[in-house]
Length: 254
Image (cartoon, rainbow, N blue to C red; front, side, top):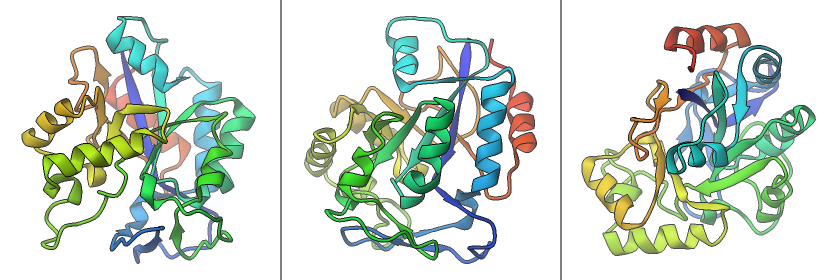
């Protein structure tokens, strides 16, 4: 018995973005991150991917079902798939939320708490703008919110590590606690940039994080480390059939 996890960041209509230059990220705090276009998906592709998951042999599950799978030994439906989004960009509310709500498909949003602004801005397809608090709260009927740090999702001065990794343990614990006060599942985490080391695993255990998601593809089984759960990046230009073939190649969940 196992499950797949899909990872999305940004959605755009075709023709509104170039497919090469990274997108400027605009958040409520200082951030030097640019989002690679490979982490975008086209709206029509996303909608067809959701139709594929809803209407074929796949079963979309919630984060609570993942928790119960590991903590209570409960079973999952065959061919289980968890949908996740990182960073809370405006396009999640603009496009993903209504598509998921119409199909009654649950999803998880990994939130960087201090990136959320106090007031909403007009949607701008030319930039990757993070939502306001009120915008995020509009989606609570579809999305479960989980921990993506409060303000440790940046590159350090060398560009080789994330600030999640270079923060002192005291800084990390305080940061995760602050984000925990906003999200639904504070002990469920996604690694900034997917980067982590053995030391980071140890520090997350100290912070009482129970589940952490990577950017490494593959199925998650009962024996998969809960702090190193796999996720499949759904890349720009990947259509529903291509995604289905990746899931099939990786092996159906039994």
